[in-house]
Length: 299
Image (cartoon, rainbow, N blue to C red; front, side, top):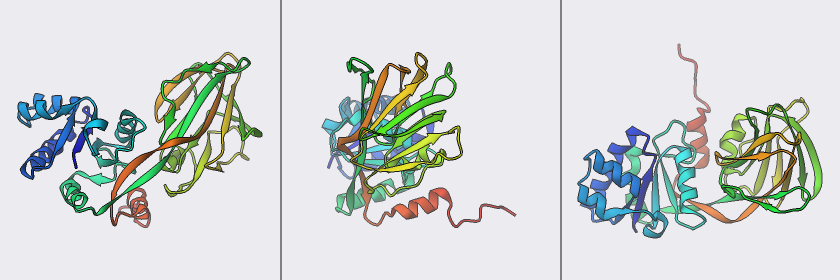
């Protein structure tokens, strides 16, 4: 098992735990590789010998590793997933951020976790992914998007120049609703703990086969989130015509012109694989991260 190590170089608190992990792996003769920017950062800080960084650096983490440890928060793990592409390399999220639903392993538990992984005491969760396509309204010409898939969510959001959006939604070709809102989130069960949760969407266990539609600040009291089957194709048309809006995939944004594009969101053919230790429980993570059952009022 070769362990790939990546992370968010802007988080200064990442470097010491990563350096400790590299030293620990070397003492145990466990093979590893370093994402190029991580290798450069370790060498620049003189935390690991320069030759170690040079010899183990790689620009292709997916090809060089059997499992990837992503140091950062949930955003870092999302970037890691996109960097790995649609391959099957499992990811372990190591939390350097604040909340950490996806990056749910703390830095002090990494060495113990690798010991369990080496012993085979782990499993891989296949997380559902959404894909998006865009075509020109009228002639159907395909339009380019910077990112075509999302692990957490796609978001239609108003730009600085645009006020309330009018979003026509069809599901499987049938009209569902016209949303007057600041935006609309199309989320996976994995993304139910992200932006969708902040906008009032439901929590869903990651293994659930579903797609969530959550409006952002809808201009009516009767609009509520809708849960659709995973097989559903969601078609979005944004008005008013001629005004720009943002279409984002896991935080990566495209600026489109309202009235020009028809967006289609459906389940992707591939999954993102997350490695979890045997005994890790999703509901335990929820209770811990959301402080359910805790007395949050200090005396």
